[in-house]
Length: 173
Picture 1 (cartoon, rainbow, N blue to C red):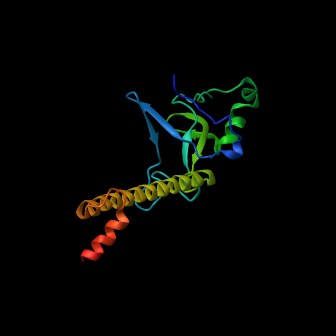
Picture 2 (cartoon, rainbow, N blue to C red):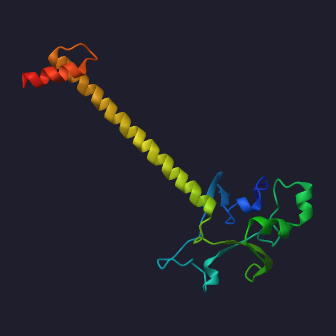
């Protein structure tokens, strides 16, 4: 029902990250899947430098290609592999001897950083910094107001005339 490839077909391939987002659905929950790395930083099960990419089969356990979801007729006419390869880095005809199947695989390179993702992270951090600065400014203003009230009460000055209250306080000292 939910299995398949969901490509960002409303975007140009050049605008997209070529790293697939992998989701698993189990026990009525979606979960993100990520490659597991060893203490040395290498992918578990990887061999050699070219194997730094994790290979994700684009087929089910029977070797049937995962269906493309939400594609238009003219996009289907382009061809399955051709369309997928516009959006993902893939290898074709990869053999899985244990399962006895051969299929295309998507390559997940955990060490590469897409410029769009780097930009989104930067914007997120910048937004967080601005929010933090605004919160800090609000705390300072709140403290200033409470100090003004305290000084006003101590000196008997009318609310809002904190400057006069400070001057009275100085004279008293």
